[in-house]
Image (tube, rainbow, N blue to C red):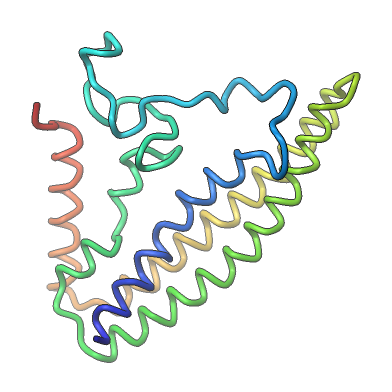
Length: 188
């Protein structure tokens, strides 16, 4: 039961950056009159070279597919699937849960701020005359908050990896390499 709880917590914690991008891109209460062009949806993880004319295949496009704006790249991180492949001691599980809880706490607060700034951005886009400088400043606030979330996420990853044994780190590295290879050479 403890392993299931640990896996559930880790899956939420490591998925937070992906969900953060999707939530921050969505308008708070209503559709913006003129959405920014980079918010167009793409093929995401489900890209099919036959349907889009691109030879790169699955995972080649960024968009709001199954994996969110980050596409398949989020799977290259030491996520729940990879950590669950390791044999973790009770102490390691406890420490990882602590890091995961702290990550969720920190990023949850930042996500709330991103939602607030996104609502302001929506209002700026809906103005009769859009102010490029004000819109740019609002985007900078959002980008700074997202950067902070990414840094917090990377700190949590580093902390988690610090509690792993050399053998577990080697296994994790091997799993990452397999994931990269799988995404670089998808099966037809």
